[in-house]
Image (cartoon, rainbow, N blue to C red; front, top):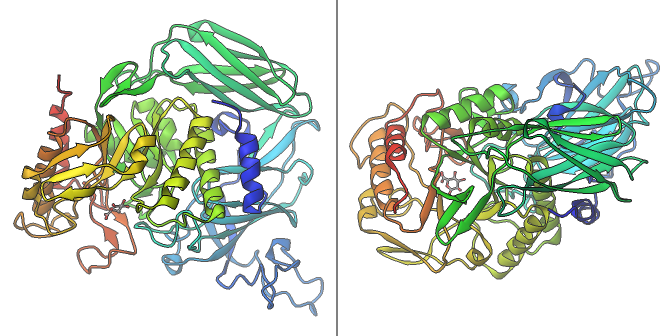
Length: 601
Ligand code: GCB
């Protein structure tokens, strides 16, 4: 991986016209942090009255100032202290009945005291994610903005921070926008708010901001990467140490604070059967950063996906970042344990984290559990392909996703897009995301969830021009659910591609309401869904170039697009598990298929 991203993100930030955090601090779970989780005061501001004046100009006296009347004659029409509260992290929709469908601005306020260990230390504020657009203020001053609902960002607050009575204000706005990423139209709930942890990070004056420590592309023994320091004293000695492997690498940072590292060693390689993680220490002066890192190599060869040089099948399932039993955004380690535990019980060695980057607990736990991961950005359906600001936004989200998770062994595929309609501008847009991904991380595979085109009645053809630039072809298909074919039609369908590359069926599924029974031709019954998967899996098993499947989807999830009363009630029912955690009949069809699915010789 080349250390281009600071420059890249800087350019993107200027294009976006906002001060994005172009110095993302990574491995935050292993740093000295103080969580600002808990109850925050909130003001619902549908008309953005706390941001714009009545001429719709940004107001210098907005809610971020947290003003109180100095005397009874002063007019101030808001008061955080006597307002409602919401829990952070967490979406607002599931916390208050009146906010279930809300899309707009909510102001959050949290007061805190903070004493640094000593004067030399620097302090940052870190947000795991705020959906979708956020403005951040500390002690009445704006410290930054961020766009994109699923990736982390941080700002330095060393100079603004006081020992007593700090007040942090966040304007979170989840309004959908035509030029957003995602755009107006999605098939999931638009959960708003500060949906992930908020942390204060305290660091040395010169500190280890970021590390990239992985096996080099194609190698089982050669560790490569870099260390990025942030601070005044950039030309410094750094050390990477993996005690269990008796490995010590010494390096010196350049004027930009970057030190390249490289060393050969023999390691116990990470895989689903052996999810081995090593304690890795990075040391720079008095700063030490620890991480748990797995080492593995992922490649393709013809139709095969190779993990540590051996062909693998990806036995997967798609997952939304939602806990159905709470009808809420997932965020905690307990949530990750529930979702990934269900995936394991289905017999999976792989998960597709749809349709945006999930919280870091998911990829950390996947590392530990030995689940391979497909991670994607919300370039979904009909993005504005010709709009340079949309491209800059997508690139920024892509960069933040890769930066956060580039040391996770579990992540084997970065996906660029989902079901995007063919056009020349779309191809240019997605190629540019692929180029950026290869610059940022050359060690993983690149894919996208494509659709089938140019097919006849009995032949499905994958020939999307984007395929040329991908390592793995992804494809979503619903033969037997959408369209007029019955599931039985799958028995006579064969698949072709013009590419000599592996295929992963990134989605296939049918709705069923748990407990609704009937014939195999009755929509929304468990029997229909069960029969659908029997015929689907029979068809897929015959595809010579198929190397992975992730059915849509692990569990029922909320969606405003699914109004059918008593059956859907605004839930997409394609889950193999119901909103209450009950396994539907189709769950067992997929499970038994995975138990028996083997690579053909
Ligand atoms: C798709 C989309 C997914 C939807 C699913 C469905 O192709 O990628 O986001 O939820 O179909 O249920 O229709």
